[in-house]
Image (cartoon, rainbow, N blue to C red; front, side):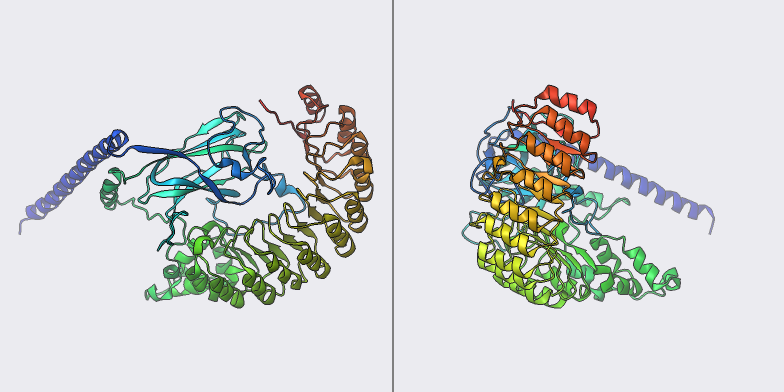
Length: 621
């Protein structure tokens, strides 16, 4: 055969490939034009008018600055039409989360972060809102009135909270997400992120926030949901574009939350026989384990499917000593726990915060998991895990004898009698009961038997009748206590403070914010300063009776002080603050918002003299 024919064959094939690529490019351009045309038409079509609605109800949230018995600074202010917008400033009619910046991470009460937390999960708080009508979302607008920029993720849920019949499947879809970014202006704004289209209608929207870059508390006024009652025509064409892109070499599979079909990813049945394990056979077992320790959980699941050697390493219980499942709350269910179970027999730190809600995790599924994996547990995070009931706490108390750290923050659906079981966990060193329905009898029992406690959070526990009795028990039994959160405890007096100060000399952190029954005239704050020289953080927020004498006692006795909040006092002068700042060389945060004697001129003067101290001065327009 002449050598010309092979050359012609190659040229023919090359010509064919060029024509195919050109045709594909043209088709894609035509399709994208059609995409724009349909999108344009969907906006103006009178047959499918856009519905605009404000939130009807706030159904769940992780924290708020306000009280459980009022509307000031609470998440419930997000329901309905705006109360403040477009005004800027600090207003009680807005929704405010409990923290901002990194100040709480620098406190003695701060917990160590979990390993293997994926870098794209940076949510710290959330709020879920329902709307009257289910729509296909076209826009979500958040009205921010003070220090905007906290919202980093918006999600939609397929479940209708107002439906009488439970859904066959509950799906969460991310409409928009972004890493935390600093917004330099503190003024009000209407935040209008560009959201993606989803293929189901929704009337349940979730905002997730990260306030770590904020200079002060963010304040949200309202949320507006725009959407179509009928499915937009554009969504019918989306699959065509995606199929066209499948032919490209740069196609990359995208896994939304990384926990879809967890059972498939862990299944060893899909492993193929390979000739060898490459150079991994030459590496020490411990070195491979160390390398894999840097992978996130979904990556570990994927790697387990590559070969038998790596499958063995990825399924080794030593890889699951610290297990953070909070980033996968939207997908985690009983099946996920079942497939993780054989690998978690040595787990010591377990984070199930935010997980299991709306039927994703059952009491039986949680109980089965802990019965196999609870014996070595030292730390258990269950913040906002609303599937918990009394049976769950009973299982924890029986299956986790070594537990030292238990977080039940905002588990406000737990019945009061469930907390009695915590008293069996005698090794507890940290207990967070913020926004729970723990009652006085159960709490007294816990304090009596858990004498090793070092960190205790009782903020916004509204079912406790007499905080003086609780404080007396803390002073008598918890001699090792280092941090205590009594935020918004309604009835503690100088008697309870005296018991705390004399019984807990190791206290480094004390939050007495919004405790209206404490009066400086009784000498309670001066006594605190004299008897607790190790204090690093003291919050006396919204106590109008704090005076110069109290500040001067702190300056003389608490020289290690790093954070002080005296928001709202009328009786503190510039001179006493200057004395405090000169004595407390480590002071880094001082909140003097709404202190009537400390105006903006005084703050500027203090900033000039003490540039390393962040002095906060809020305002109302």
